[in-house]
Length: 392
Image (cartoon, rainbow, N blue to C red; front, top):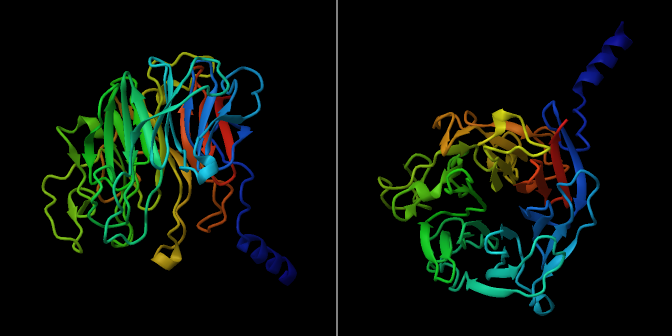
């Protein structure tokens, strides 16, 4: 009896083994289709070729990613012309405009337009159409300088998001901590300001509304601020999110003077420190070969990178990387925000990137896209994996 009891105690005390690949709900299949170093945002062409922005000097292409058979080998589609001189990395943001026959790339210092025809496997030319981070970092920056530039496009309008140059400061460069609108052939204008790091840009194809997933600031009370996903262009005028003075539902950061009575209030909230990196709306009328079940149509998928915060910052464990699904009715979440519980508006769709609350991870999701045939694609900047998810 004693030996049996001892064995029983040992067996239940061992930590659960980490999954070898991320896990998806029953009825779906996840497979790795490519590997791209430090993969970030994704964009997909009408023929199913997949573009992958990276933390490096190049944007990659995965041929036939949404085809019925195997994919072609991932290879660089475009490399920044300044790569030999130190580059302008990361070239993380990618967005494709079939109407404009162009691929747009967000680099650290600007936005590039690359002429593109469906089926093309390498760039022939590129031109810089806008510069960002044109001014200095904030004079009181704490060194938390964000370098990625995200892009999204609808019709002839390009949206550009640029992160802040600090965790909490007053920016002197108007292109930082902002979302910019860049009409075709025109100069950009600010459409959202004091928005710390809106990495995840997505246009709802049903309405044309721009949404943004935003990573909040650190050094607030534990568990604050919530990460947000919001319909930026539904706010009147320039959407002012109030950072670093305001957060959540117009709560005031007592460390910084200011008024929060007019700060933009987000439509979707998620737990603090999760860090939204990518977002995509699943088309309402998707009828491709690999279309998801109706309950997913019109909703949004958001990739959460997971936290670097852990026990040293007062948490019981590390916040896990995951991909979540937000059910929507047009641009209205199916469940309104509950400001005392940031877990109410979404469900986990891709899980098991992390072993419990530890920092042992098999990946961290970044970019996300929906293919013309309905497949869902997810990038991973920790391993470089590009995953494809389809109904079983």
